[in-house]
Amino acid sequence: MVYLYFPGCTLYTKAQNLDEAGRECAKVLGFELKELSNWTCCGATFPLAKDNIMALAPPVRILARAKEEGSTLTTLCSVCFNVIKRTNQLIKGDEEKREKVNTFIEMDYQGDVRVLHYLEILKQEVGFDTIKATMKRDLQGMKVAPFYGCMLLRPFEEMQFDDKEAPTIFEELLEAISCEPVDFPYKIECCGAFQSVGAPEVATECAYAVLNSALKNGAEAVTTTCPLCQFNMDSMQKEIHEHHNDFRGIPVIYFTQLLALALGLPAEKLEFQRNDVDPRPLLKEKGLI
Amino acid sequence: MKIEISRHKVHNAFAQKVEEISGQNLFACYQCGNCTAGCPVSFAMDLGPHQVIRFSLLGLEEEVLESNTFWICASCLQCTSRCPKGLDIARIMEALRLVILRKKERLDHLEVAELSKEFLERIPQIALISGLRKFSS
Image (cartoon, rainbow over all chains, first blue to last red; front, side):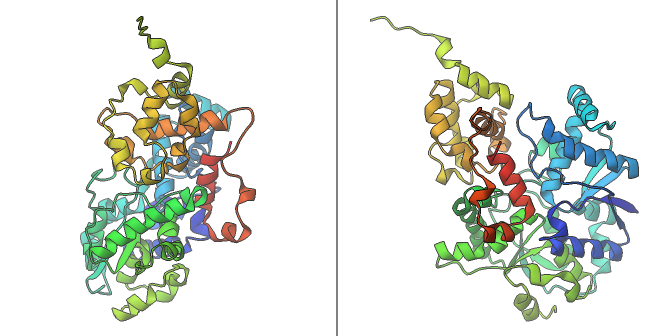
């Protein structure tokens, strides 16, 4: 099966560790990620003002190009997923906005591409049982706290991704790859999002609350699917230490990196050097690398 | 003593503007405070999101626009997800940002020039793009 793939701005640069591992896992699991040609940035925010039609132009253009090349569009980044999926639904249901945007971008898109997150492909198309059967490396019951954040889940009515307060898709994946999922109360909270630019001290408090909760519940690592969550919770741990002496620190690992390890891919290919809190000591301790 | 009861003060021009941009009916709010209670960043806000809605209806434009509430909002949609009246509070916060950003003075809350070169090299594109789309006109 071939899926059109939209990497998004950050996966080509700072989040190569999310992207590379995702592409490699697809090969092992027997599906192909075909990169969408001529893609642009999705805008990184879904416009919340009713009259902000201009902000719909980039995601609609992306969807229209996807329509020319296929019938589904897949992302790894939860923000891209949120922006593109919400836009898709809006365009499908709102004739007036559809016409305005189409006229502006000089394309004709009706909202009929299926937008899928990579996790949905794993669950619905590949199946967690298949993943379990394909595993080459036992992750030794590593205790991993799955962090969903906001964008995969909300708004629930539009995303239709998983339960809005108690999602389980991440846990199911972690179990399939022989990790022990850690349940913790902050798994659907906010990492601070773009406040790392506007009010970094607020963002670090959010990240601290999440990470500390994961630690208190016994996690050895946290996993995410979003480059923004990753930045706030991984790279900003330096700042968290400055405000909280008691903070122990914890590696934050993209779910594709964990999956790739379980599928037996060589660690050198997984860009662990890009994770600011180095996960390699933990992985060594577990005998995984 | 004469007491004048008027709906005009409550449904003032400012509240109307917020309603227009957000597409939300502020009157639906019954001040339960669920939005503020579940908000992950309300600890840093001058006014809770529920207070901002009430203040807007009371015509307290200055108090609302001077508060940091909507600049601190991270658009995580937890309030929207949990509002028992189905109000999309994140849209109300966006409308308040836009009330300021759309003024002819174009007073941006954040400018790229304010960010150090070191920080710009460090942050991922996704943070910079989403941040500047929220904080600048």
